[in-house]
Length: 418
Ligand SMILES: [Zn+2]
Image (cartoon, rainbow, N blue to C red; front, side):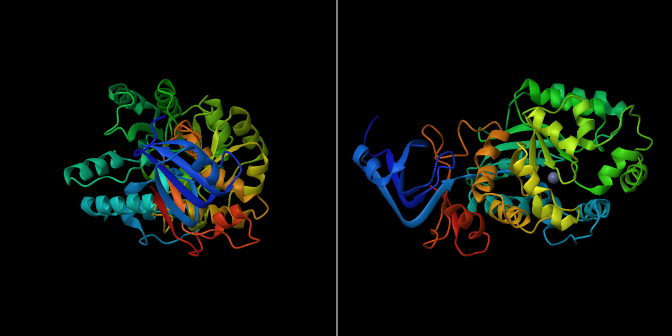
């Protein structure tokens, strides 16, 4: 190992690798953009020399992973009202989107992405009905401004309820070059919106496309009571909405009995599938998700805003279901902060170990995105994507409990590191 100018040693009151116990008076030694070693500051100092960055009184954590966002809805911040009903919210959303000018949508999304980066998010899985994040990236390039160095996926989310549209979608999928993103940092992919807005065969095709490329596949699932009613009986506000949009009767042969059993019957649940929301799961759904190794991506603040209910956070954390966290969009949240999502989860399930919330927001998110080899924890060989929490807990306060509450409560600031 070359010693000297390319080595930087970050020393802080606490270093939280997440994959191993926190280190008091710890240090992270980096070489260019990779972590070389993490350990007690005196040990790192005896082994390496290089540029020293003293972060006295601060805490270093891995960069956070936002496993579900919709940047393209950012212009709707504070333009949507909580409704208490999913379908009412969807109707309001469709109306509100029509009033947004493309330039406003783009500028708000850029602002939202910058805010995500500033609060320590290192990677995201961003879905939208256009290649929105790709467009954002292109616009940074056009203006010659550096894009926040966030990694992840720009995902075209397909809404296509009729089986007879399947061929068009599969032709589009066949056309899209694999893995090719608009830049090295952000890769393109596809997702299906939900089990009730995408025909079964099309869901299979989209999952097949991502499976062939070993990419994550995400789909909204079990978000609202209306969705549960739709899968159980084929009726209710979602059926009405589909009828209004000219999608009824659906030309499907299968439905239900729950969103999860429906997706399981399609064979699309596996360790690369991310089920977004998982608010309304029954015991059997949970067992299916667990046994297939699929991910539950919780977006608690969005659930509260839309009024769909709360996920069974304590039960999910105690089931062996793999959990990651997303912010959802500014159409159902007033900020895209993983800290606020962790705090919300913790208030829904105070008995869950806050260390597990931190893991869900970091290493688990990275694993859900297939990026655990480079992100999500502070370990040798991973990228130097870190977040600096500008403080540390008072004597007697548990470190993880403080991490899960203090930044969201505004008691302490966070910024990306380096
Ligand atoms: Zn969503």
